[in-house]
Length: 480
Ligand code: GLY
Image 1 (tube, protein in one colour):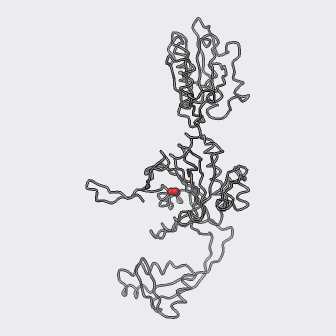
Image 2 (spheres, rainbow, N blue to C red; image 1 turned 120 degrees about the vertical axis):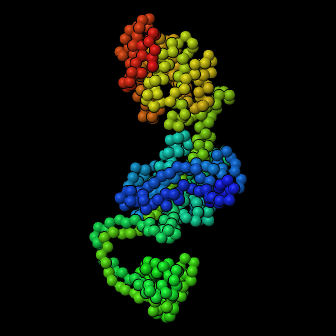
Image 3 (tube, rainbow, N blue to C red; image 1 turned 135 degrees about the vertical axis):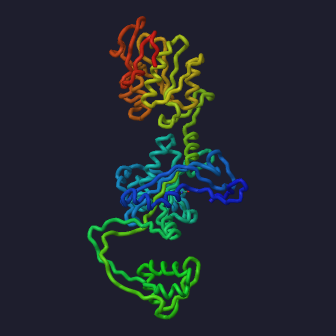
């Protein structure tokens, strides 16, 4: 943990968390109650974490304070299947297993189903989260050629992990670990349960109840209380909580004479007369276990650095024109609205802005006097995926030009249909240049929703927006 000092005099020691995970482990009992005891279940948290890095460097890659997002997925250690595994089983992942790192140095590209079947990835749940992470990273702009999953070598595995695969993104500084996927087994819950003496077990119902042998230790509380006074309580609790195998081992040890026990760091000498043992059986209706934790852990700053590096490019025909090819889902602005010049009536842009905003599509408006080419270049530079130009023809045909950033291709689209097209393009429900998008291209006649004429009063409904601000009149009535 990252030690610090708190308070005006700075003499109160404090410790900053190195991961968000522990808060979720501490709340495991409450969360299990909340889900009605059903397994598996998961919790997720995003927040700041701190590590006392010796050499912070590389922008957001190695820093002392960073944002991380973690999922703790709790499963039965005897059943690490995942109910949605089939949905990702045919995805392919670039894997760099530990054995390849110390032999041929080559990656492999199996389907997730093959990787689990052949034991390369240890279980379905770990593999499920790796596949979902890959889908996520690709969807936010990481290029598949610069993404791989590297398995930790035994020598580098964290103390809590039984298997670990890092999603690594290729950056200027090399392959950078951005999302860890660890099978933390039962380590954390066992350690918390031991320290707090609160059971962090879960259970699954058995199809048939089974008879279970009970063999337990019964301490002579009065005798032990007199002998050990204040320390007796810890010893008695320890003896009463012994599992069958430990109770049998103690019985065997005491058969040969006094036994020395260490409980909470204190040594006790236990005489054979101070305990008895009893044996019985009971019907058991559920199987108890300490859950295994499968943990995807996302370094947000590193992922953002990966997105910036993978999305940046320079137009091949002009070294001065830089572009971020951000997918719409992460582009801060989705659409740029560009009135061709100062003679374009303001209500066209205002209506488009209202309609796009109402659809949840963020808009930037550039009304500067710069040439349209210069304004396209400006919005390319900040990664705006689509631009809409309102020109003088718009006054006549009620259509606008929609331009896609990377291809620079354009479609002429009815003004009243442009918001619906852009909403679907930004949501990814249709692709640019797909037949569905091209079907939006302009028809020669005036749209049926338009009435009036370019010279007179004209009212027009922007499709799909029922609010009053989706209607506007031109030229005398303000739009909003
Ligand atoms: N919780 C995983 C990590 O902190 O790296």
